[in-house]
Image 1 (tube, rainbow, N blue to C red):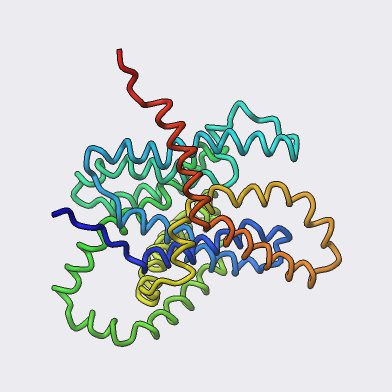
Image 2: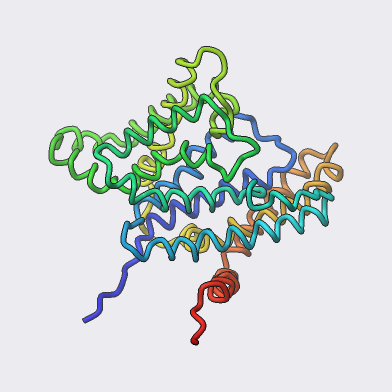
Length: 330
């Protein structure tokens, strides 16, 4: 008897919240949100996607082609489309580097693809998360420009991805070894959530561009390494805290999470086309801008989360995949 795969709403809800925060990040064109606000968004957006992706990742032989189909092919397709749109809107002519320097938010796809590609290698190591942390700290000494295949952020977020991959094992070991600690955590997790979040915000308020892993250490490198290490801890703790407080009931976030790839791939075109218009129209009308941009953020998220959008997006990318990899009978 075949078993029906049961989808866990909690993780879809986490992804739904994360994708909504990313849309806020990208469509807040006038940048009226304080810098600390963006760092709060970062704790509960991209790290959530990397953590959840790691949690559900496998090292079976067929995973490579699945990653090619769901990550690499969409990356190639939408790098080309985005360059065409950017050229039409802004006149940006850099077609020669469109696959080397990810356009707009597409670095996430190639980064996640490389994480899944490297996963079997890390899984053979004795201390994979520790090694990934060392690599992440090493990349703080040198910045790969201009955002070459998202490599700097790939290895910056790799510990979060691996933490998600090993989370079930880590959680079980902690439960077996420290049952009293787990009991206290389950009893007072709301207080812990508030304390940890407050601590994160205090430290993040003193971290500038490095919170995106796109800048090298500034000043005394040891202090920079400590800040980057704490930053990675924030990005590992954020999804765990969110997983504890997130409901497992199906709600509006569930649909957003299930269709998050369509939202992620397509929402950027609203940003590209409106970037030259919104600042001029609302330059002296901040209140009207806040109302309109809030409505736009909700509208974009709701429209792109429709099942029909994901259905035809998958048909499009699957068609390109089949065109490239389908075996032609001799």
